Image (cartoon, rainbow, N blue to C red; front, side):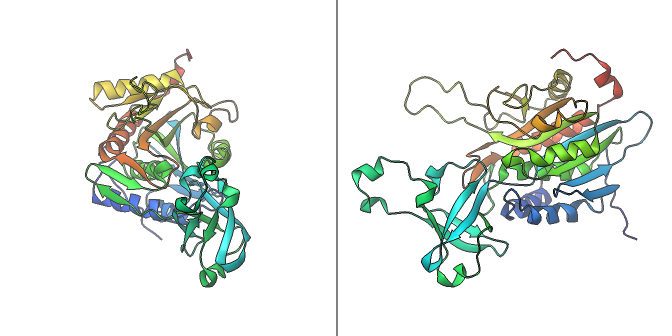
Length: 366
């Protein structure tokens, strides 16, 4: 019988070498929506000695339960998605070149010239396009369509690839001073955060962790996971765009920044899919104020997280989202601050430790 690994529930988790190593492993893995296998295997290995129950459901979500102690415990679901945006091979052409389609929200303007990895063997390729000095003036004025791009693997490697194989950017994890650079920070930051919370699970709640699939193509895994768990409340833990660059074409300050690096975890009051439960928003902001944990309110707007699906399941689930801000989300490489990640972990752990049945007994006012 495998012995369960126990870590002090009262210990506030911190970010150090072990956490960086886990995030590196997660971000370097390929897990485009619909083929989350690599990240799922990492998650299963990390949680197997920590949880009271681990299940993989029909869609591929990893559902982890850690029971607390005492009577009247609140069932708290936390969700982070394992999948990332990417590409899918759809047609083989001559000489090892492949047509492809986007999986999830990718701006095609960034694609030409990018190094990619294809399939579970991580076969190296490059997205080819005509060099700019060989284009006409009219061609340079037009957007390059995905249909005119090819993933070039060469004839020998190309023989190992078939339509239906997934591909993603070849960016490797790195630490740049106070920052983390990697692909798929959306949402491997969330995945790593949930694993750390499991290691330090508060005993006042039943902790229900959903490592979800296919978030980037419609929040699909979250619906199934929430139905299975039937939680009392939920928090989606994600990474949100830090659109904090200046307005280069204007002297007006960028006031629509969404979130900013160095501002701490982003608490959602409203996005394109959810209006955050005000009781949960107040819990998080109150914990931040009382414990000097920096946080920011994500500017209301478009986009969404797994909470957008979770809050509609069964009879409804009070939900909110908390995200680590990252620059260049859905591009080949993103940038996030180490301190923002650490403060997100601290805020969530401290807030979860204060959840009681009385929290949800208060009338919802929003």
